[in-house]
Image 1 (cartoon, helix red, strand yellow):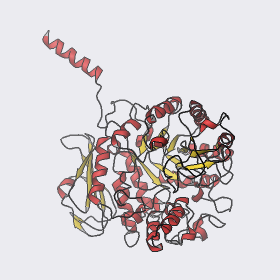
Image 2 (cartoon, one colour):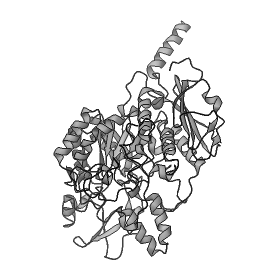
Image 3 (cartoon, helix red, strand yellow):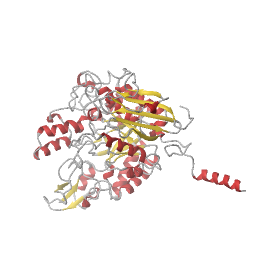
Image 4 (cartoon, one colour):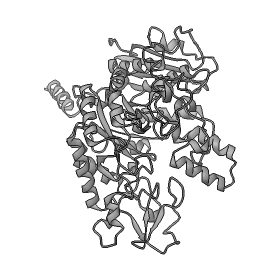
Length: 573
């Protein structure tokens, strides 16, 4: 009788606590598709021009779908293509349910969704829900008067012209308040004066947004990236922009009313995210998002308590510590976004690699280091080619943030040389130069004149020269994508940092109980012995960026991936 009770206890316990894998997911349950996927970000203005006006467009993207299919990506995150005055390159939306003529038509968009789908590629739209353009019909009505039904769609404060409600600053420079003479009030804007912030406290604003998202879902989009979503619950009277008190209430309602009604990937941009907050954002119960973009690693090469323009050397051991923290603290209870680049960031091979003698090796090393981790990798257009930063004259830059910073720092007494060094290192235009397709004029991007100058190194760095070359950066990315789909350890394995005190080596292991993945990288150009030869004994070399590994010696920017059986396991590979 006692033995029977023990057996019954085990049965009851197994019902209450189903067996889980190394990621904390119930065995036998189907993991969301995006956990085994790789996302490719397109900045449409700079990807491919089809009509010779020098600006990339939707038909241009359609013409390059075979390239994306060959690379092996699963979804395309598309920076905004909605109707917009283009004050901030499309992040100032005047109509969420139409396409800006510079990019094409709504019919073009529907064709892109359909033709990408035929290739197994989903289209992820970029949603800007914190603010609109000041030319959006809502704001045009809102400024007509305080009694107008759209007035409360935005954030207003009474005041006297010339006497600001408070001293809050906008991200793009200047005050965060703009006087509107028609209403005799100030409106709040965290970015450009042409980007008034929406008032999420108004339930009608939220309902308008949910209806719009449902409309895009009906058109077959595969998901959404949520721009600066952690700012929607702002409290400007208290100086709060990020992580306002009602933020997660709003996000849960947003998800419940829209995202949870489809099989989508959703990723929130959250500059102020911590692992604790990320566990809310990416809770496996699906109550908020699939994942968030957090930027703790990206802010490491600036002066402490400074702006992004205040340059500092990368603290390598701190980078390792931050990456380890996010890998371990979200395991089984959240999900990571893996990225080095995007449309707001400089090119990673110029930033933390070597865009000169070791451009190819360092680009591959940075790719291997990132893609071996747990999370969904994002590849920014041209990253798979090792595209680099640019060094232009200030007149050749187009980014509003860069130009505002240049003007403000000149006024503060910075030298032009100091300012330009910051521009070369951190300007968003580093990522926005045209995609380098070939060595033809304008890099094969356009038959006209590109809206922003093409990087002069396009004859040497372009897709045409890399697609068929098995040793190219492109082919290395293609292999990484294939490996992620082939071996579950990439998605499921627990993370273990190795060589933590090394000043040169970034190494870690992933273990899912069946397989063990080992990633060893020399982050710098000095050859160094890594002291980890015992770790890969008996393991297979999956991938490396040098053709002939030399034992324990890691050459400049060398990267290796090994695969073997899990420790203390008889699992099969």
